[in-house]
Length: 238
Image (cartoon, rainbow, N blue to C red; front, side, top):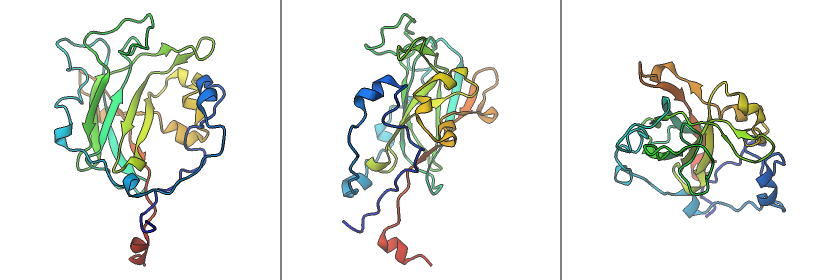
């Protein structure tokens, strides 16, 4: 087991704090004792693996999953998935879920007053290609009130889940939109202490992927954690 390469620890401040008092629900669910770091075993550094047979055809396009067209402005969200060494993460499962254009999720726990859209489920998935690139077609989600504090509103955002090459690399995060004035007031966005790391959660407007007369483009590159080299790998370095 000592020859199994361990994944690097996160840089301080680059991950959301478990306890962030302005994010009210984190007070109840954050750890009350110091965390114990367990070394990764073979099961954490291998798999799961995904292939084309695991993907629903067309699941990357959230605007064409029903008989009609969903309400809201079309957007293309694309980017590249790499590890901390800049290596593309190929054939990686990328999943997204989001609110509709009115700011409501198709979920039994969302009983807000905003309307549901019968032509928008709000979830999709795809695999990265041989270059680590992914692409989704969807609609821009709406902002919504969420009851965390007085007059609390979540900025427009899309949830991402990526598995990467192993269980230890799985990432669940959120993508935000540039210029959103609600970001300054959102405790979930602001619970990451490092400002540079926090701002990497904001996508970039991407003219190159904007489709004329159809949809705006946004780029959201994602970096998954890398691994420390094994003793055998170190032996081959100069």
